[in-house]
Length: 468
Ligand SMILES: Cc1cc2nc3c(=O)[nH]c(=O)nc-3n(C[C@H](O)[C@H](O)[C@H](O)COP(=O)(O)OP(=O)(O)OC[C@H]3O[C@@H](n4cnc5c(N)ncnc54)[C@H](O)[C@@H]3O)c2cc1C
Image 1: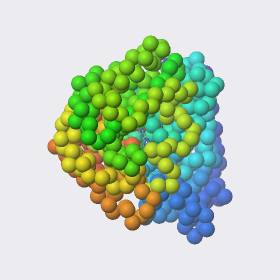
Image 2 (image 1 turned 135 degrees about the vertical axis):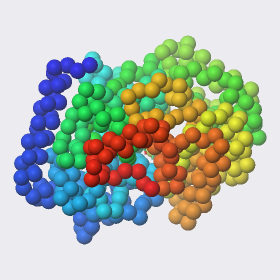
Image 3 (image 1 turned 45 degrees about the vertical axis):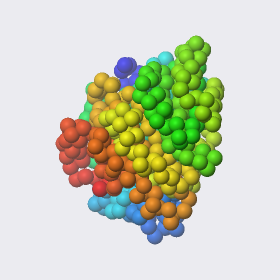
């Protein structure tokens, strides 16, 4: 709901940014960015370039300069500087894009890491937040001060910016919605270097695109206004590990079980104690102890439960994705090859296609393939670019510490997605493997609309888009 107070606050923020930008624009943007801009000749450039992406596999792409702005006016100055030099602009927030789509040649890289605003209106359940906030840190504040929660990514460290722009499948997505469905409004620096406030009634083209166009978004997001939710009264975290021999029984159970919306699960081909295994990792977000018991009973109803080599049920004080410790499934410092496919098929149909690949060892000890049964496909269409889902989602993740594994890992992830082609309908921007996979990420209609809007709002293609 738009209140008078909120409109006044926005107007003041946008006016302050615009005034500061006018005074910067009057002078030399280089001067305005003094101490914040690092050119390729600067000794700090390469460490900053490498640090602009979390994946230890770094791209062979070199922006002309990197800017670390500390306020709105400096972001505006950076976009104007890029325009003056004829460069494109790439932006990053939490730096967790698998392929670092923001690190581009002939471009200025704006790393928003130093912008860290956060305010919460608990009555309206609205958080105003800079996109570089790491989701666990954001949720810690929401949880401890307000008893609220945002549906964060499943692993520690992911930033809000890319997560929300790309769609965002967080914990409890069925109940709380995709990250982008919770985006109510945003402040954006446009291709003209203007700061605008965007919501359903103002510049709504930008809101539509910010809800799911990901790296195809034509602006720099400075602030997000996110809907946040009351914490579920009880959370259950479940993990079962089964030997590879019982996969047929697991698949049959998954297909005949009706999982309620307050639960979510992933079936994962991985290694456990050095042996091929299948792991079911699930969360239940319950409103009562009775519901929590029902969730445990549901996952315990798997007919091969007695064969499980691990059954771990915990009632964490915080949501599983909100752990502030390093994540065992996605360690920092490793090299990742991630891909994904939305597939229209039952678990049995998926498994029939990948069976042969999964019978072979995964490329490294930590590598895995996940099948998730999110029912986002059944959601009603909303005013958003996000437009492509299917019955299930399959994501191979190859993880290594050794660059000499790269070719093998890349080929494996590609093979898994290739064998799914008969039932594949598209890919997810959050797991982009763009140079190889190339989507589609949006419905044909949404992709066409995005290009029309880009031509209107960014005719000179100031902002970088998808990798090709
Ligand atoms: C370990 C790990 C776990 C993950 N788990 C999940 C998960 O559970 N669910 C899920 O949905 N995704 C998940 N992801 C994917 C993740 O959500 C995306 O990679 C997301 O883009 C990361 O957001 P970021 O802000 O950290 O990334 P960045 O690398 O900072 O940004 C990603 C892209 O978004 C755009 N962008 C970012 N900030 C801005 C801005 N302010 N203005 C304009 N454009 C911007 C740029 O194109 C940029 O290249 C995971 C990724 C990792 C590495």
